[in-house]
Length: 119
Length: 119
DNA sequence: CTGCATCCCACATGATACTG
DNA sequence: CAGTATCATGTGGGATGCAG
Picture (cartoon, rainbow over the protein chains, first blue to last red):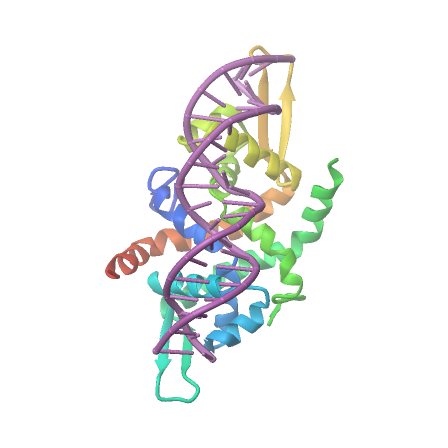
């Protein structure tokens, strides 16, 4: 099968890690939260509520590493200030990601019902 | 923030497990493969190449449980025959999923380059 | 051919405490 | 405020063998 100029599973091996990132526990949530506007560390943390400090750091570092999120430090401020924002690349991900989330939102009732029906 | 009639992260807790499913190691690949046409167990296994028997079974069971994939047994055949196909619900997932995969395919070069740039 | 059961380990994640 | 370090733990997933 073909996906653009990619074959499955041939070169598809390269997109699998990307999809894994999308599917990890926090990445999607953080991208959607940052899609509103740039935000500070603890601001994100409050919005995600039950994310641990560790996982927020790790997720942001991963996104930064892939060039989806940019990190900017305002060291002169008091208290110190670190702001995260989506890069241009990160912005392009928002649309398809949002579409997928909408699918999930629209169908979660059905899926939960299906899953519950089984013994 | 709002997502359709869902809030993040409030009810979003319900869509997170769905996104996790999408992001797991094999689900996306299998859905895309089945989007071509219904296929048999070992047919899928050959196309995914390096999936273990165990994980293929587990992934298909999960998808079946959620009502995304239907399993049909042809017991009278020789050798026995089990066919998997996407349900109508499963079909509706293909489009947004495909969009996401295309994003990944288009940007995997950039992302790999970004990730490699760091020490 | 299409599975299920068991063993096992690496890794992802959470909890907690400490730092600049 | 924005992290880092360490320890504990659950689970994803491979290997293997058996079964209908």
